[in-house]
Amino acid sequence: MNQEIRDGLRAAVPVIISAAPFGVLFGALAVDNGLSVFEAVTMSATVFAGASQMVGIELFGQSIAPWLIVFSVFAVNFRHVLYSAAIGRRMVSFTPLQKGLSFFLLTDPQFAIAEARYEAGHRLTFRWYATSGLALYVFWIAETWLGALFGRLLPDSHALGLDFLLTIYFLGLVMSFRKRALWLPVVLASSVASIIAFNVVGSPWHVSLGALAGILVAAAAPLEGVREDEANEGRADA
Image (cartoon, rainbow, N blue to C red):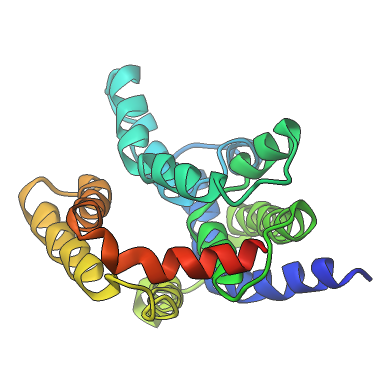
């Protein structure tokens, strides 16, 4: 097996394990909200965005205008505009078709593991990216199917603390970038803004507003603070 394929599978395993409770939970909630097993699986296969899928199924059964549902999902997924802008510059060897598939597979953990790989000095290749992304995609669909079929037999994931697994995983990913210039001020700004937004305007706006606060801090910082990171990126590209 090619080394990049092995590396892609290895990078995907921790995400698959930590995201499993959420995939199963979505399948169970989808059925509870009136979707069939087929509809729940189809939603995971076509939308492939856990947070917006959760928002969608909560709104579908209510008397809410379709445009408001679309707007709410857009608010949840606005951060993907930022992800695609950041990771797109790493895809120098990707064809337009490969980029299209890659952006469809772009999720929070996929972005994080891709950045971590680049940070470690490896080029971002389509073979590695597609392997890790497709592994996450296939298992997310399988987890949705299991949750839709057997979700009612499972104990409360909140009581067991299973819903916190992905949070722990993301905290570990954030910490892995701590050597970057401006890491601490950006993280603090994002955290404080997200907490304030959550208490003032509520979910899901706190996600995008927290990300925006971090971007503004990074954009306002002196360029000298990021020269070392740019030099490291140049060495990674070489």
